[in-house]
Amino acid sequence: MSADWYPGIRAFCVHWKHAPMLQETFAALEREFNEESDASIDAAKGLVECACRVLIEELDDPVAPLKPEATDTPLGQLVGVATRLLNLGAVRHRAFSDLIKQHNRLTETLRVLRNEAGTVSHGKDGFIAKLSAHHRRSAMLAADAIVTFLHEAYLEREPDPVRTSEPYERFEVANAIIDALVSLRAQSDEDGLLHVVAVLPDGEEVPLAIEPSRLLFGVDREAYKLVLNACREARVVASRDAEAT
Image 1 (tube, rainbow, N blue to C red):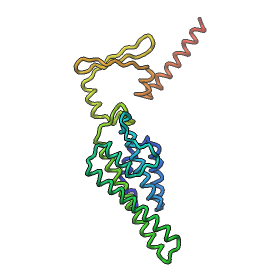
Image 2 (cartoon, helix red, strand yellow; image 1 turned 90 degrees about the vertical axis):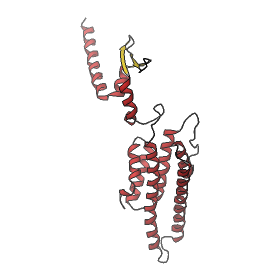
Image 3 (cartoon, rainbow, N blue to C red; image 1 turned 60 degrees about the vertical axis):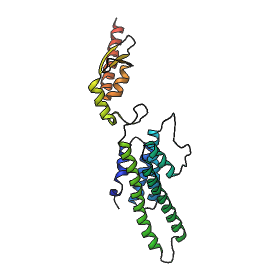
Image 4 (cartoon, rainbow, N blue to C red; image 1 turned 90 degrees about the horizontal axis):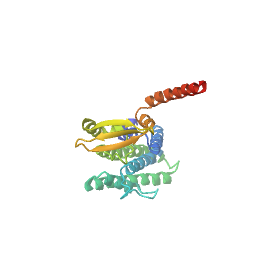
């Protein structure tokens, strides 16, 4: 088997590279998969669960939350909440619920079968090994199909800029609209705050106030470092001049 079995899972994990639990689960899945271990079956389920939780955390409305409180929420319920938050149709929801149920059932059946067979089972262990290999593949394919479905549905949406953990680059279309139609003017006050006014297309003004350090740190870290070094040198010079006088 190769990583070609789960391209959708990889794409999802690259997109959400700042989600630490997801990255740990993905690392475990790749490790168990590469070792051809049956633990990759559980890792595949864990990855789907983790992907659902990432999307739920991103999309859930704190005013009317759908996020399950229990830590042991069934996988089917998590997928159901994720599809609701993605505003997917009821038909797709039912179809994917059926897929989740069958996936869970097959996983449990395999676990029982292996437990009953044991390490030595009158020549049947070769059959069990083949069954495990096929199920590892089916587990990965099913998990990849679910994660791909959810991820592509998510990418078709524009996140809420107030609540999202997505970066600025995720709002490419919205950013272009603002940049084309909004102008800015700025001035600093005696307290060192930078006052910026965003002038909207209808002439309405939206005032903002921000420290220069916060603006530099958020926009350009190299510029922040350059300005910081220059300011430190200026302080040293000012201190020397004060001592000289």
